[in-house]
Amino acid sequence: MNSAPVPGRDQRSIEVDARGLRCPLPVIRLAEAARDAPAGTWIVVLASDPAARHDIPAWCRMRDHELTELREVTEASETTGVTEVTGVAGSSGTTVAASGATDPAYLRFVVRIRPQLSKDEGAGNSSERSSRAR
Image 1 (cartoon, rainbow, N blue to C red):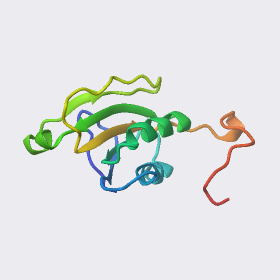
Image 2 (cartoon, rainbow, N blue to C red; image 1 turned 90 degrees about the horizontal axis):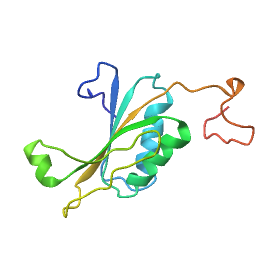
Image 3 (cartoon, one colour; image 1 turned 30 degrees about the vertical axis):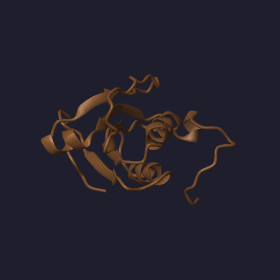
Image 4 (cartoon, rainbow, N blue to C red; image 1 turned 30 degrees about the horizontal axis):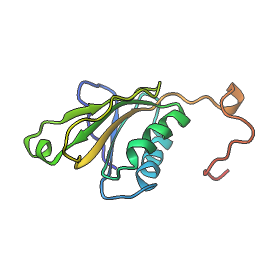
């Protein structure tokens, strides 16, 4: 995980390079980066596993974080430095369908970490499980 700027943003950002990792590792790496990140942090995730297209938006919905961007980066755009925007997802879960004949070299997600309510403040339920040690 590297700290990397998000264009147009002044807040702290983290880059998670999960290219080459298969499901569920891209989501696990995102969760690890988000665990101690303060609210307002931007996490950029790069993932080549096609399952990440569904897994990362689902993780954002479950954790109430905001997926602000989903881009496909093709090999051609990677060499020219131009990234084609083919899909954007927000917290509402709406997405724009991808178009084009070229499979992406990888997917680029931008996630904004939102403040999390504690269970005492009404978030979660008593049946919720956590992978963190207590």
